[in-house]
Length: 472
Image (cartoon, rainbow, N blue to C red; front, side, top):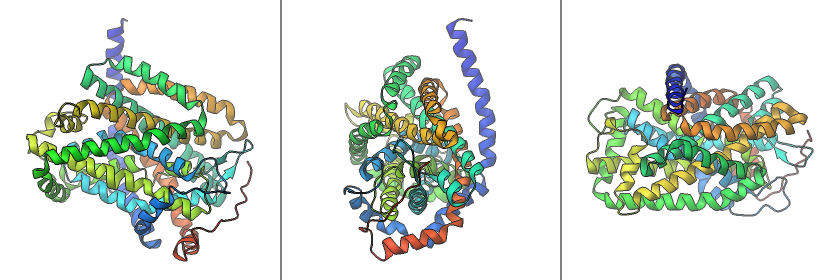
């Protein structure tokens, strides 16, 4: 079998696997899962008296130091590392795919999921901080798996959560990101995907073996810069197509309840719009999945409520700001050029939008996509390692090393996989992470309210909590 025959065999195998995964998603992401996710967001929003109203206070807290507190990194380092895991190609390709398949109205459902999801992100981070532990090497670990095992004595369910976190990490945190880089370079500069896969594998390998502190240092420099550059590019696109902005906003709202494709074709009704808007919003901001709580648990903080508020801002930045802006740019640009979305791939939507920026537009998006995707791969590495540590316990050192090797190999595989398959895999894994993560949020909701009342509602956010972390 020569190289071309091997590539054809691999592509056929991926296509057959994708059909199977898509059939699973069609079942999982029906009304039951949508109700579970949105129901959790709504329940916590009302139970915690709309924690969304403290978002700007939390943003101010995120840049303050936390002297004398337990943890491995600063709140800001944890925030940008979390943002590295959430602000990725989901904000570009993910939003575009939701708009293509679900119609422009999918953006409204994505935005609403993000706004309501701030409450869930706050709650899951608070629980992760309350039940975190200290390992023998001095590092701090936490997340939904420790909440399940320590607060509820559900060790088996905690392991299930870790398994699906690993699947989610390999699919959405690795495969999707590497695939986006490869596809973007192929489309923009005709770079062979196997060459991109090789270079990307080496780049990831050179960073992840330094652990959280190495990853956070890279993210602290990369995430703010790449986000600002992307926002500037989006604003430039909106300035160019300013006469279509209002029309785009009206179309997005109307299409949320009566979906139609921009090209004129039917998109499949409100259910499809809702399904893709909510699921892509989840993949982007991760509220309800618990992954961000794993990173938040490693940060220094005066008290758990203070840091949970800071962690909740990741959903604001990711969905309310970046995803919303992406959607409006995409819809207004497509209206301006009369582009039929039904005749293009998902990745081409934002490419066409940025091409309207003279001279540098397409090059700018290529660089942005690379940095977004690369930082997401780094952010999810940490979540995967912490899941391995929990599963293997005291004998996890060798398992973590093996995980890093598999992660590097996955970087190569993800770059050559078909786009639709990697997104379907991520969507499936996300659904299975939600259930074990949200169960404690309902059962321990009184504890959430008690802590929130003491530190937030009674204005004690500056108080230093006495934290005696158990050693494992």
